[in-house]
Structure formats: structure tokens, C-alpha cells
Length: 511
Image: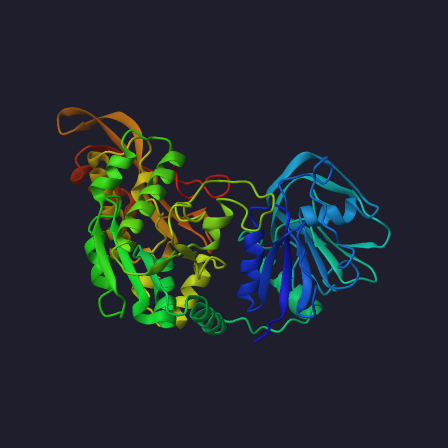
């Protein structure tokens, strides 16, 4: 089935994938391509969107997309850098802003008669992220929205279906962002909303059947949402030719290895548990740098999977539950100029010496999309509702060296925290939660004795995609009880702190 398509040109923004995600939330198919590798614009392409960028339009090496076959011919939407490019390159002026325009802002003017801003009220919160500002627009440009600081927050070009937003409608903090995108895609572009979870499942399973045929595939299960959904999709496509491996790297949550294996019973999956704790601890010995930890863990996972795959005759593929946030924070998913935030152990393929090809059925999806797909596959709600957990496990929640004692402490702390969230009916209200072991010791008094022990941090955030997140306002009484339980029950901890930073500027994990 051919779906209507929205083409997103990646100019380097870390939010580019979020644009695709928001569009797919509206059941419209989207593709992302580098700005300098624009595909043929066929009849299925209903619009083009220009992303943001870490560059300034005034930079010598600023990305400049070729819009000769796009602008004025099909609907076009510029976002942030895209909006500035459409001014700078077509007769307007973009200048450095006196103040960096970053964070929440509110619209002080809205042209509610425009198709783009229909239903958006004055005062609507938007998210700005730019150091330049649009100083002057060509005469055929019409302002559609402003803030008290940013005069040209949105505009359209007369006699064209070309629109632009200085703010980011794709991020969580732009409260009417989804509505604005809907106005553009439905009312202006006339897109059909037929890109659904059911369509994704059918087309993905059919694609996997065609790609894999009778080949054998080995998949590393983690117990998380991503690998579980990937496993069920692959199982539907190739059945018994899928061999699942669950590796205990010694960095899982308390009791997780046993509980995950139990959860997979009855799902029709061929799962084998592998105890590799000692191998991972040896690989991490003496490593404190978070990036080196990730790479060491990734290399060891590859070694373990190679060993296990060699025990399976004629295995040809390694399956991974890689999703979009993994990719966009590691390297540009499209070959564009996106900046690297961190590497991920399951991103980047395999070394040349391995004979396995990689299949990643979920790499175009965000976490919430994966859950919707899982729901359509009728996967148990308990599995689908699990909080995200980093691939490298507790290794990146332990700042500094990895030791058996530090892992023990963090496992106990994390167990108390997560168990308390569940028993207090708070777990499902939190997108992700966990504990962090800090390389800090402080003085405490326990009984009549002076102590000099470790500090741990608790982290709980609310989000829809993992790209932006706000800290959760957990009840003080809850935090007080959890802190008291941790200090009383976990030997080696005498201080508990709660992280109240949002993403951005902080990340969800500490590392």
C-alpha cells in the first residue's frame, strides 16, 4: 500500500526525529533524508519540512538545501533554522539576537484566520532554541504569530503553500505544536491518515519475511519494551528461525535476569539465558569514563553474541531493538550534520570480522510508538509498561569505576525506589525512574556513630519521547520514606538526593 509521504530534510537538529514522530502520531508516513541528498519528489510526497540546525544561516559552512524543485511547487514548512533559511536566502535579513532565544515563550499575537494557526490562542506556550533572530522579512511574507521578544515567530509566503515557524512545534514544551502540524498536514497538504500501528505491523512483517526468508536470526533480549516488540515481530515473520538470547551482564536490576526469563515463558519465543557477569566485569575493570564504558560493554555484547551465534548452525543475522533516540543521539541517522551526544552499544553495526548481518525492525520508531505497536501485537501490558532502561545497564548509572560492591549498592537502592513507586501507584505516572551512584562520600550520623559513606541520587522524569523530559514532582512524604528506607536498609549509603533538572539542558541519565 502506498501511503502519503512527508519528506523531512535533516539540517542537523537533534530534534529532527521528533518531527517525524509527531507526524506519525497523526497517522501520516514520514521519511528523513539529508538536506544534501534529496530524493526524487514523486506524487506520494505531499510536503517537505526543513528541520532546525546547530548552524547559523550566516555561517560560512551553513547547510543550504536545494529547494528549486520544492519551494512554490509543493507545500513547504520551515522550522527554526529552516524558517531563518527561507528568510536569509530569499531577500530577508537574519541577525544575531541580543539575547539567546532559548526555552519557553508565549505567543502574544496569533493570526487565527490563517490555516496554519487555526485553533491556537494568544498565550500559547512554544519552545524557542536559536541564537539568531529574523530581523526583516520580504514584502510577500506575512507574519502569522509573534512573542514579546520574537516578532516573526511564524509566517507564510503569499501565493505559495510555504509556511515557517521560528519555534519548535515538535517538542513536548510547545503545547499546540501537534495542532499546528496537524493544520499544516491535513488542512494545507490534504494528507491521508492511514499510517497506523496495524499498517506498520503488516508491512514490517511482510518486509522481514522477504528480507530474511529461511535464514536464522539471533536476537539479544533485554526484557525491555524495544527488544520484546522486535522479538514478537520477528517471530511472526520467521517463527522458529528466531533464536533469542538474554545476557546477564551483571549490570541488570536486582533479580531482573530471573524475572525476565520467567516473563517470556508462554510467549512462544525461543529464549536462552546466558550468565556472562564475570566477562563484563573484567572488560570494565579500571574504566571510569562513561563513553569508554559504553564502548567496552558494546564490544563485550558483540563477543557474547558471536560466541552464542556460533553454537547455532547457519545463523546469518543479528537482530537488535534499536530505536530512533538511540540513533539520533549517537550519530546523524541520515548522514546529515547532527552532533553526537553519546554513543549507544547497539548502534553502528558489527565489526568486519563478524559474519552476521544486522536487522533492526524498530529503528524508525520512538518509544511511545514502539508501545503502540506492542499493544497492537497484544503483548502483555506489564512488559509494555516497563520504564526504559539503558542498554549498558547500571554501568552508566555508576559514576566512576565499576565494582561488585558499587553494583550491589545501586541494585539495592534502585530496587527500593522502583518497588516504592509501584506500591504507591506512581510507577505508571513516571516515564523513567532510576538511581545513580555518585562518586561522593559525606559525613553522616547513624545512631551514635559518625559515618563516612556514599551518596545516591534518585531520578524520575515525565516524557513522551525521551528527547525532552521534565522532572516529576513526587510527593515529599514519598521521597522522605524512600530516602529513609534506603539509608536504613542499604549498607554503605548515608545520603539520598533527588534530581530536579529537566532535559534539556540535562540528560535523563547522568553518566
